Image (cartoon, rainbow over all chains, first blue to last red; front, side, top):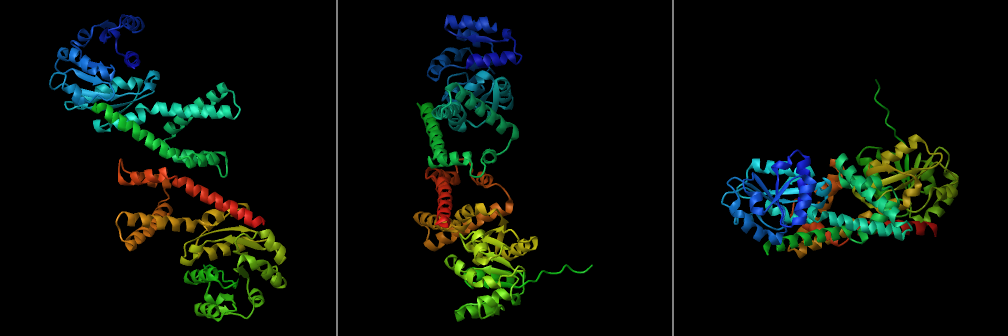
Length: 255
Length: 273
């Protein structure tokens, strides 16, 4: 994820000379320098004098990393965290007083510049800080501003969301194979159907129900299939699945 | 310029039952026809005096009703339609329109039994009694445009009217024919929910039925997609979406879909036997 964001920033016009990456593993460091021309330094040196610091470490390492780099952050440094479940409060308690902190929830399609990033401001953030973070993340997808209390729901929807869609894809491919299609054919059909449907939705701006109804001709194949989905309470399954994800997100950020 | 001529025609009911009564009330109330244009008969005195009280012409026999009418509505029970049409066959002349409201009786049967093809078949539903029927008609080979207009006006006096091919009539029966019963169930259950939540039965039932009426009126009058209307009332983490979640868990949508399909299938079975 960190590398995807880096690549996005560089493609968006940031010069490699303006970026310093904190990465402990020597092989990974070498890779990043080779691919992107950025200098890789120990964490405290990487953040020293920075206007903005992006923290893309695992949630369980955030405590240690903040202990390490916190003192090295200069006044006015914009701190952006992508660590799931780590609250702005947690970060603000471990960095110099008054630093603007923004929490971001990205998702994996950022890797292909189709990410959905949600950003939430901490206590010392203003419009300018949010705008800067938006600008940084917009290179790898869309950005939505949300109050921090909505981030568990966001995690459930767009954070884990790609997984639900892959789940549906898997199911449809298996169904295709069950119906006699070669797996490769079924895969091509499903992937393009997913892509095309998403595009249709995004570009027409039509209500998804209306789009669904347009494909559902009287007494037809779609109607027969949707009836099965309703019988199997798939809508309710999605609802409770996402509730479980949001609950888990809340639990994790409380731990 | 002369005022447009109002189309006043002689309307006869063979079978002066509930639907004949509903149509008569609606037609007279909305002045589609004067009561004196309507004629019928019945073996029971109370039915005869009821129609007389509307101002209709009361005759002695069904044959007289047919002879004295331009449009004849066959509103007897489905199981006696064949017998009635066979008896009245000599009186159905080409200048008359035969309108059947008998559930499950196809136009082909009406044609075979009456000997005529100037037929319109209508599937209304029980809310005709309160002027809120959903009626659908299909037309026989020699029915005219004017015949269609007359039927539209007659059934428009008791609710809304659509036209559809006869092949859809099983599904229409399954949906609008049987539909009021599905909604009665829903109203009962909503009221039960109200009582479970602490309301008195009277209040719960009144709220339940007015809510169903209101929701239907919103769909009809705003022209908005019901999905959109639902979106508009489901605020984030609010009460309504909590209720809807329960409906989805209970496969509410599937239940209604399956009800309509089952009723359609049953209608088809019955009309084939």
